[in-house]
Image 1 (spheres, rainbow, N blue to C red):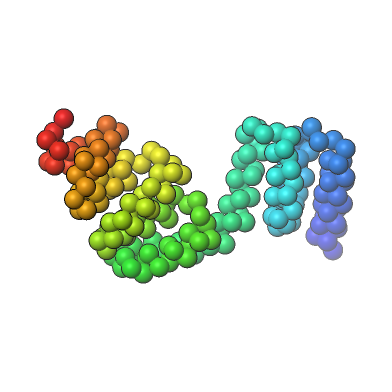
Image 2 (cartoon, rainbow, N blue to C red):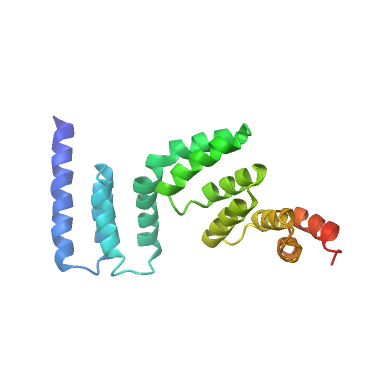
Amino acid sequence: GSEMCIRDRDERTAEIYDNYLIKNKKDKQAWLIASNLHIKHKDFERAKEIIDEATRYFRRDSDIQQQQQFLDHKLNIEPHLSIFNRASEQYQNQRYAQAVRLLDEFIEKVPSHTNAFQIRAFSHYYLNNYEACIADANAALDIDGTNASLINLRGVCYRALNRLDEACEEFRKAMEMGNASGKTNHERFCGGS
């Protein structure tokens, strides 16, 4: 009984906040509380709607952005993580073709997951699919451009495709970012400095 009372009270409270926000768009705490009340009841869609609307009034607010990222993860990534985990397992076991197949499925559902593109890039490399490897490295670097080992990997692929100028450029970039393999590759294939 008491659990039912608490749930009813929380639902009424959520409704009160929802109504309050119709007229009071500039109350940041109210947006966060309203969103949190819906999260508490596992109504992530409604919580996301609320926080998405809040971003119209608080564009650069870190609390609102953090809540939005949490809900985005909850709604758009978590439901598909089992696919990613199976793909990672296939990759660890050097079953690269199976890893690629699972990562294709995962990336279709979660198109901005850096690690998925990264693992798929390395899988393509081990399968000698150099163009596909470069494409996935590019996709991962578009999301997060700071991964020197992906830049080095691109260089390795360019070298395998006999595109030496591009390979040396990539090795140089990776080396300048402090990547040891990039330095070794640059010294070995590009005459050092």
